[in-house]
Length: 191
Length: 184
Image (cartoon, rainbow over all chains, first blue to last red):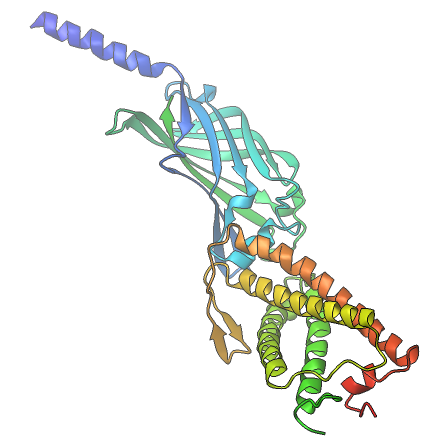
C-alpha cells in the first residue's frame, strides 16, 4: 500500500516536473485554433471587425516561469478579411497595408512580465507596413492540458492598440478611428 | 435622318449609341480616377462609386444594344477614297475599342461582385454576382480594370485623333458621317 502510494507520488511528481520545463508550442494552424482579429471604430458609431486568415508562429511557455516565455508570429497582410471584397481590396492597397510592398507582418517578443494570476505583459517588436515599433500585448493565459488526441495544448488571448499613423498607414478614417485594437487568440500544440 | 444605317450614311440609332458610349467612357474614366482619391469624409465617398458602377452597367447595356444593332443594321461601307491599309487600320482600331470596353466593364463587375454582393444600378434594380471563385478576384480584376481603362482611353484618344485627321487632312466625310451629316 505504502509502496504503491510512493510509486504514484514519484510518478506524479515526475510528470509534474516534466511540465515545469519551458515547452515549445506551435500555433495550431492546421486545426486553426488561432485568430488574429482586429476592430476599429467606424465613425465612432460601431466596431468594424476583421481578421487575418493566414499566419503562423510558435511560443514557448512555462506556467511556473512565465517571464521566460517567448512568442513569434508572422502573418500575411494580404490575408486581411473584413467580409467585404471591395473593402479588403482597399485595405491591401497603399492607402492601408500596402501588401505588395510589405507582404508580411511579424511580432517577436523581447520580454514577458507577469502582471498577476495568469496575466502578463508581452513586450515585443511589431513590424507592420514596413515599420517596426515596440508594442505591449496584454496577455491572458486561458488554459493548458492534454487534448483528446494525444497532444498537449496551451492557449492565450492578448490584445494591444495600434495607432495607424505610427505604422505609416496613409488613409485617415476620421477622429474616432485613429487606432485599431488587435485581439489575438491562439492555441499552441506542444512540439 | 433615318433610324437605320444606309449603305452610305449612319442612321440616328448608331450615331446616338456612338456618342453615348463616348461620353460614358470619358465620364467614367474621370469619375473613377477622381473617386479613388476621395477623402473618407467626402460626401461623394459612397455616392461616386455607386454612380460609377451604375453608369458602368448602363454602358454595358448600351454596348449590348450596339453590338446587336450592328447585325440588324450594318455600318455603311467605308469611304471610296480610303485605301486598303486605312480600312484595315480602322477595323483593327474599332476591334481594340470594343475589346477594351468589354474588358473594362467585365473586370469592373468582377471587382464589385467578388464576394457575392450584387451591384445596385441607380437603386432601381440589382445585377447579381455570377462569378466569385477567381483567386484574389477583387484584386486581380482591379489590376485588369485599371490597365484596361487606361488602354481604352488611350485607344479612344487615338480614335478621335484619327477622325480629326480624316476631317482636316484627308478632308473626307469620316467625322461628318458620325455627326449625322450626309456623306454627300
